[in-house]
Image (cartoon, rainbow, N blue to C red; front, side, top):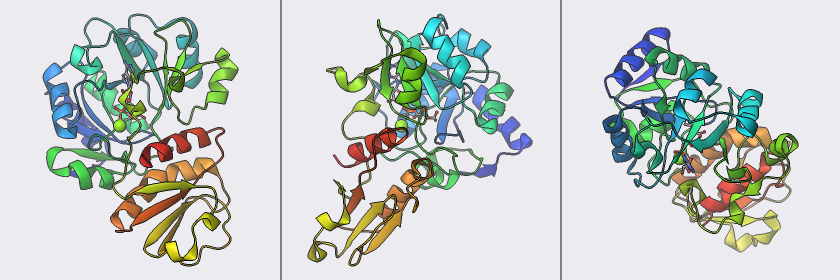
Length: 319
Ligand code: TXA
Ligand code: MG
């Protein structure tokens, strides 16, 4: 395993490695990805093996331009194109009917593909240098918290990933918002930094994945993004009697009054800034998971804006 600062030389070496069918972990503005050439089914198969990811879970294909996105999907038009032009590069994945040369393994056999043009300069430079669309899930073992630093990737997948490009901590810290355009009305499959409010201002009412009876994205599986320590959602620390605090930790965002007795308090943003809290959430969950606590109590945040995505990840972690 090697972590390399994402210099132009390291990016060029990583691109060569991708073109030869290898795997590279790389930074995006949301979380770190584990990438392979999206057009190379054998390379993509290696992603599933390294992550121990079930083959029914499709991957997102990353591109560096609208033109490359147009070669990944059958057609980028209408409302999907509008969102692409409005939010790319950025933390938005569009699910659209796939182009013929995207292997079925990438999409888990689905006729649709998730495509995203990330904002992170290293991600875009890597895709451009490889001159390929790059299939990349978050660079964590299946079902675990997504990595927001190169060190997180190394800690969990290090032995299996020959090259990790280090581009610093992720600016957003939560996985991309996913919107599907395979039905009559766009569907929000995963909430993220591009908020439901922002999307509905552009498109009118969206269908929510929660309205759909069966999960089509494993990110929708109830237990996902999960740390190992039991996590319980609460509205105020007062819900936890002093006698129950010993050996447990509190995960908070915003002003707190009485927190005596908790073994640790992890404050995501003392002023309650949810965007800042999002950037720190996964690192905090990892740190708390490593702390050996009996339980983590997590304070709910308001479910508006990016708070919806934070609560989505906390709820899944609490299953
Ligand atoms: O921010 C992100 O999206 C990060 C970075 C690396 O770009 N990637 C990421 O990938 O979070 P992953 O594989 O951890 O999550 C992708 C989600 C999965 O829940 C998958 O089921 C869903 O996207 N997905 C991908 N293609 C899909 C499709 N064709 N239809 C429905 N869901 C799809
Ligand atoms: Mg993931």
